[in-house]
Structures are given as structure tokens and as C-alpha cells.
Image (cartoon, rainbow, N blue to C red):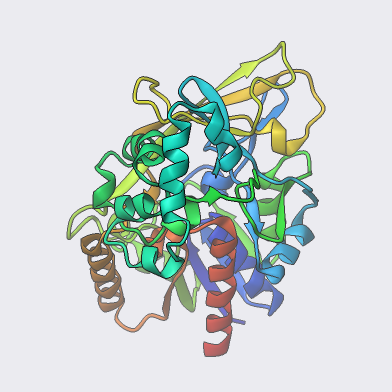
Length: 374
């Protein structure tokens, strides 16, 4: 029976191992951290379920992925709503027309929106950069309040230097005043006692999946791990620059750090699971409160204060030179492995900004490719 060596036991690696196991293919998951799950894994603080790495909302149009996630753990019927602090007031994100009157210069904002109401999506899609795309959507006043300070705080660079490619996924003006962030038909948050950890544990529960933690795999020692595990093929879900010893330099990521605090005397400390803070006068960029989604019945809550600029790999900087560098690493890895059947999956290995459902879809598709090749 074939055996796969999967480097990285995040959501992508765990999903891939699950799918291969369905066809009798054994997997060995090698994870450099002490536990599987990566950024998705949930935890407890003083009994309160929370997310150490910021909020993750499961939302998708992909019914196969949704059904798989629900087969691992039940999900709450949770729809994600985000607040944002603007001019000292808590408003909705995305921007609602009904929130305009609560702001200064409301008539000017409405005039700028009216000028742009007829601009079609294709015209905005041709924008040269993220800033231009947003200005075409909402005008300079809203852009200067909601978007520019938040974006530059999050990414650490001028918004005009960022690609417009991911803008439609994250920025909108709601003419219909729909307050919810995601339009997907399938949405929720794990209803079990351990949050996303239950999803991850379910994916690797098969006796055909072996998890080994605290194992640092690199290009230099990969052959040892292949021989020691008897693997017939390799799947990389790890960052390729680190895996390759940064031979051609580091890939550019924007990292965050979340500091979580238990608050014992209240059930909820804010009005939504996530509150955004665009102002540069506030040191954090978002505050997370998982309890809105977990719906856990327990005294107290946990707030996670998110700070940007940390040396972690959360968001790839989607610029042509970074894409070219990751492609160079991919070619180099394939060349060095000299014919060893090798596959790449997930946001780290493919250097893409994708949601959880896309990670699972990539894993299922990669497993399908592997099974076809076998």
C-alpha cells in the first residue's frame, strides 16, 4: 500500500491525510510545532473557548467541503458580523448606507457614493492597485476613514503598493444594508467543546494517519524522513523558503500577534466577534471575542488584541516579485528532489491568501491528483 509523507499538519495537511485514508493510502504527518492545526487550532483560557491566532469563520459555497467539515464536528448556525470604530463610534463593517448619517460630512459622502453607483465591477477590476479600486468604489472620504488607515496599519506599506486582486473579497459598500460580512450559503463555527480542534482531530483520527510533532523538516533532511517512513511520495504544505534554507532570500509575509486576556466578570465585552480599529492612535488593529461564535454558556469571556508587524506568516504580500520568488523555490525543490513524486498544497507552500474552505478544497484536489497518479 502506498504511503505519503506530508510536511505540515495544518488544516491543509490534515484534510489531505483524511482524503488519502479514504482510499487506503497511509500518511505520516510531520509537524514542527508541538500540536497539529497551525493557526486554526482553538484553545481554552479559564474554561473559556477562544482562538489564540484570531478569528476564523467557516464560510463557503463548496458543499462538499462544508459536508466534510460537518462530518468531523457539528457547527453552530453563526453568521459573522464585524464592528469598526469610526470617529469614536462603533459602526458596521462592511460599510452600510444606514451608517452614513451617523458620521460627519454625511451629505458629501452620499454625493461621492452617488457619483460611483453606476461604476460596474469590471471597471474596478481593471484598477492598477488596491487604493485605486477602493476609491472607484466609495470615494475619498470613506476611503480615508475606513480603508486607508486600516490597510496601511495592517500591511505596513502604502495601500497603493498592494494588489487590487483581493479587494473584492474584503471590501464593499452595502447598498442593501446587509450587516453580515460573508454572503456564502454555508457558514458557521464549530459547536463542539474544543472548537476547531475537534475538526482537526476528526480529520486525523484514522488509523491510516500518523502524526509526529516537534519534527523540523527541511530540504537537507527530507531524504532521511522519506527513507525512515518508507514514503512513496511527498506533499509540502510548508513555506518553501524556510524549507529550502532561504537560499534565494526570504518570502515577504505580513504577520500578526494576538494577546489574549480573560475577563472574569462579564458574559460579553464587545458587541461583535471582531471589532476593527483603523486609527493609528490605537496600537492594536482588531479585538476578537470568540464567544459570540462559540455560543459557549460560561461566565467570563476572552478578548484577543491583535497587533500587526509580527514575524509570523499570516498574509502573503501579493506582489509579482514575491510570486516569482515562490515559483523559483518551487522549481528549485523539484530539481533537488530529482524525480521524487512531490506535490504542493495550501497557503504556505503556494504563497496564497486563502480561507479555510479553500485550504480544504486544495487538499481534496491534491489528494485526487495523487490518487490518480497512484
